[in-house]
Structure formats: C-alpha cells, structure tokens
Amino acid sequence: MLLEKRNQLIENKEIFISCIVPVYNEEPNIYTFFTQLAAHLKNLTDYFEVVVIDDGSSDATISKLLQLPQECHIKLLQFSRNFGKETALMAGLEHAKGEVAILMDADFQHPMVLLKAFLMQWGEGYDMVYGVRKNRDNESRFKRSFANLFYWLMGKLTKIDVPNNAGDFRLLDRKVINALNSFKERTRFMKGLYAWVGFKKIAVPYEVQARAAGKSSWGLAKLTELAITGITSFSNVPLRVWGFIGFMISLISLIYATYIVTITLIYGADLPGYPTLAVAIMFFGGIQLLSIGILGEYIARIFTEVKQRPKYILEQKYGFEE
Image 1 (cartoon, helix red, strand yellow):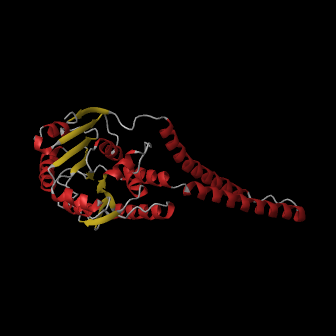
Image 2: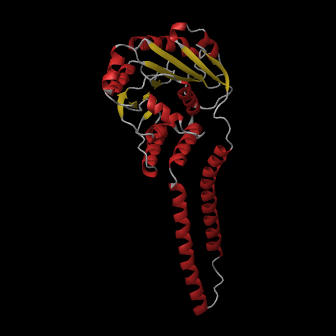
Image 3: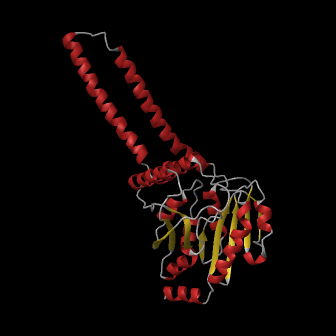
C-alpha cells in the first residue's frame, strides 16, 4: 500500500519535495545553480520548495538569492552569523514542509541528475537514499588519509555504521525528518545522526563534480573539530580507554613499589636513579594532562548543552509567508 502511494505520487508528479541547500559565500554560483535546480525539480514534481540557509555570508549571496525568479520557489533563512553547516542543515530540516527532503550543496559537486534516481529509490520503499563518492581523487593525499582514519575510528569506537565516503547529499522521507527534528542536542554530527535514526536506506554511488567557483571552507581545523565532535557524540570509549590505562599504570606502580621496598629491605638504600625518576615524573605528567584533555572535551560538550542557548539565530526569513 505504501509503495503504491509513493509510486502514484511520483508518477502524477504530486510529491512535495523540499530541497535544502546551505550556502556560504556562494555568490558566483547562485543564479546558475538555483535556476538549474528548479528546472530539475520541475521535471520531477509540480510541488517543491527550495529552502536556502545562508550561514553568515559576507559577499552578495543574499542579494543574488533575492533576485532569483519566483519559479525557483526560494525560501530563505538568513543566519545572524556563521553557525556552521551542521546547524544550517538542522535549520533547513526544521523549516522543510515537504514529504521528502533532498540535502545538497550549492557548489555543483553534487550532480543534479541523481535526484531522479534518489526519488525512484524512495518509490521502492527506502526512507533514506544517500550518495556515496566513488573516489576521492580530487582531494589531497593527506585529506584522503585523514578521512580514512576517521571512518576507521568511527567503526571501531562507536556502535553506529557511518558509511565510508557518504556525505550530506541524500534524500530523507518525512518520518526521518521528524526523527531528526526530535533531537534536542545543540552540537550535532549529522552523518552520525543519519546512521543512528535507522530506517530503511540505500546508497547511490556518484562521481564528485568539480566546484564551479570558489574554494572549500573546510580546512584542517574544521575537519578535526568535526571529527572530534563525531567521536565524542557517539562514543565513550576514549574515557574507558584512559580509565583502563590509569588502572594498568597504577598496577605497574604498585608492583614496582613492592619490588623497591623488597630490594631496600634486603640490600639497603641505593641513591642512584634520579634520571629514571625525572623521566617517570614527566611521562606520568604527560599521561595525566592527556587524559584531562580528553575528559575536558566531554565536559565542554556538556557545558554547551546545559546552557540551553538557541541552536541558531535568524536575522531574516523570506518566502515563508505564502
């Protein structure tokens, strides 16, 4: 019954699609991207909206968006400052009204021709259809190694299955959207949440296109912060590991202390050993600082959550009055 309804909506072009697009300093791409996106969506349905989230752009992105023709069905959320892509996606999902939502970037790296394939898989009964990169040849060797290490760690440290090379380019059914909107947490790792909510899902491989203009704002610092957020949001293994290390060090220290006391009682006090003592103090001091740093990451995220600040602040909303 469900499949029949979905396929009927697709065949009659009656499905309401919300396309969620976060933008940040995308002025050169605005007109070309959104006019092409609207044309692709018109081929799929008669009912759609394009929810654009401006994440504190400093160029003419806003003015370019407001100049787009009405046929593009633009609905704009303008943040008061840069809150980050994860927050922008969250805001888009909260404001989307469609039966399905399609998340994509405005830099042309996500191929629009894949939207039909996404919708067909939804018609087959899948509640989440996500794009998976066929390769990362357009990235540096360091970035590829960093990504591989991150996915390996997520697989080992967490109980969720985050697909390798799967990003935010995906289609979500309304029940998946409602599930994601039910979360109260402020610091989010969306790729982990997509996996955590479950539901029936399928991957669609695609070739990453070249950026039409500009350059990525995701440097090493942002990627590292996102990776730490992902691990600390879904795993307490780092805390347990350092608890185990602390136990083992304490056990070794107790055995060594017993040995020293025994030797001293049998042979008397032995003065040499100051270099060994200094090295041991510095080693254990470093271990303590590292463990405190890991504990601090978790405490900092608790601190962020308990302040209960708004997840984002909107400066303006356009197009939602209709």
